[in-house]
Amino acid sequence: MVVSKTFNARGTINSIATDAFIGSNNSLGTHSADLWILGGNWRFSVVNGNLSDFDADIIMTKYDGTGKHT
Image 1 (cartoon, helix red, strand yellow):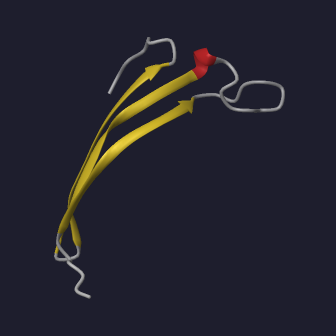
Image 2: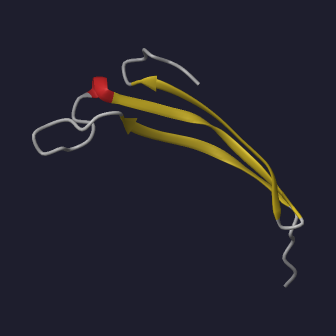
């Protein structure tokens, strides 16, 4: 089996995050106003076994649609 030391990879980023601990038991995300939705793309290149390029574009918005930023 021959393993290439030069290749490109890409994919998507999709997640939900919170910026605070909420609730009496320190559970995350118990209030939808405190939730952030993340989405975007990533890619990288490896040349001769070394990372030569990395890029990620992520957009975040609050659960209610406000606060959009990159």
